[in-house]
Amino acid sequence: MPKLGSGGRHGRTRPSCLPGDGAEWIWNQADLHFPGVIEVVDLFHARQHLWDLIPKLLPNDSPAQKRWVMADKDKLDNGKIEDLVAPLRSLTASHPGVAEDIETQANYFEKNKERMRYPKFRKQGLFVGSGVIEAGCKTVLGRLKRSGMFWTVRGANAIIALRCAQISGKFEDYWEARRA
Image (cartoon, rainbow, N blue to C red; front, side):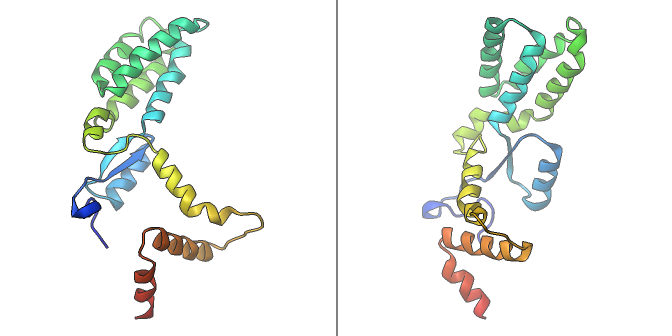
C-alpha cells in the first residue's frame, strides 16, 4: 500500500490533505490515523460560520449584511484569518447581546487559522472543500443505499472493500491477497 502523500500520477509526490469542518474530534482522528496529513477546514463550513454570525450583528439590514460578508469572505478566502479575527474581537463590547456568539466564532477562526491558509493550499494543488470527498463517498457507497437493500455491518464492509478495490484499479490485487 502506498504511503500517504506518495505516488500520484507518474510517480510524482503530492501532499495529502484532510478536509474537515473544524470540529476538534476530526483533527484528533487525523492525528491518530493520518499523522502528517495537511489539515484543511472546508471553505464552505468556514464561510457558514460568517454567514451565521452576520445577521446577529446587523439584524434587519440585508444590504449591510451582504457588504460585511463579502469583505470578511475575501479575508477568509485569502487566508488572512488574523485580519478577520481582530475586528470580530473588537465588536464584543458594542454588541453585548451577541458577545458570546462573536467570541465563539472568533475562537473558531483563531484556533483553525493554520487550517485556513487557502491560497497556500491551492498552490500545493490541495482541495479546500470537502465536495470531492462527499462525491467520492457517494460514488463508492451509493450502491449500498439502493431500494430494498439491508446490510449487516460485516456485509457492508465487504462490499465497501470490493468497491474501493474496483474503483482504485486494485481489484486483482485485492483478490490475489485473499487467495494466498
